[in-house]
Every structure is written in structure tokens, then in C-alpha cells.
Length: 180
Image (tube, rainbow, N blue to C red):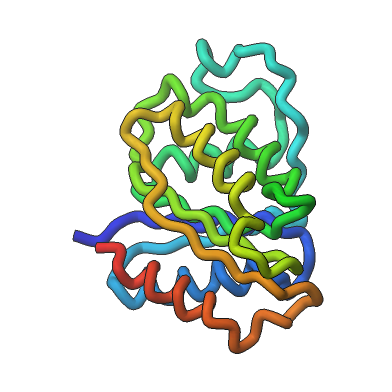
């Protein structure tokens, strides 16, 4: 049975390396027959969470920006893949802001179960994405039906397009194609 897959690309840079991972994952998920949508945070207005917790009662955030539409897509998705550059050994700030703004999902009847993380960084050591993965895992742990299903890391990529030919692209594609 086809899954509803949502890919959220959090880099604000054109032709970013993490977006290339998102596109490879997307190609694999589509090849497997899934319904796939990619949302990029470029040109989106996301404001910081105020911590008011109104979303827990209203089931939606009171802040009027682009986060509400994205969070609703997250709620309906069976699978969510986040693509982020690694900045200072962490996920991008805009990804963290989106996760905070997705607080309304906590008390909702969300569909997602499998969560993926696709990361790219200038540094090439295997430990580089660990804190970013840990940060996402903390968010996932708040959702009892959800689990981290897989990660891909492309190290040694910095300038836009330097990921071309990197083995992580094939890994992202393969991870996407296994979704069924």
C-alpha cells in the first residue's frame, strides 16, 4: 500500500547539499510507488514558538505564518523525512523552529510513524550528525507511534553542489525506495 511521504528540506541555500539528499530520497520514494511531497523552508516565514501552549487546546498554533500549513502536512503524512545542513554540529535553526512550532501535533491524531533524517556537512567525521540526530530523537520521543527509521549523512560537502557523486545520494535513494 502506498504511503503518504512528506520531505521537509530545511536549508535556506539554493542548490544546497541537504536538498540534494532530499531529492534523492524523493526519487526513491516515488519509484517505490508512494505519494511524495517536498516542502522547502526557502521563502517561508516561520516565527519562534511563544510557549503559550494554546496549541494544546486549539489543536493549532495561534501564530499566523507558514508553519501552520506545514504542520498540517506533517500531521497527515505517514512518513516524514527531514533534510538539514549541519551547522555547529546541530540541525539548522529553521528546522528546530519548525519542530518547536509542531507542538500542536502532540495532542493530535497524527498519522506519521517513520521519521528519517538526511544531513550534510563540511566536516566528514562520522560523529558530526550525532547531536542533530539526538535533537530530532528528542522530538520523536514525544510521539509514541513514531520512530527514527533511518539516517543518511553526507560529510565533506560545503559549497552548493559539492555533493554531486557522493555515495550518500545513493544511500538516500535506496532508503526512499524501501518505503512501501
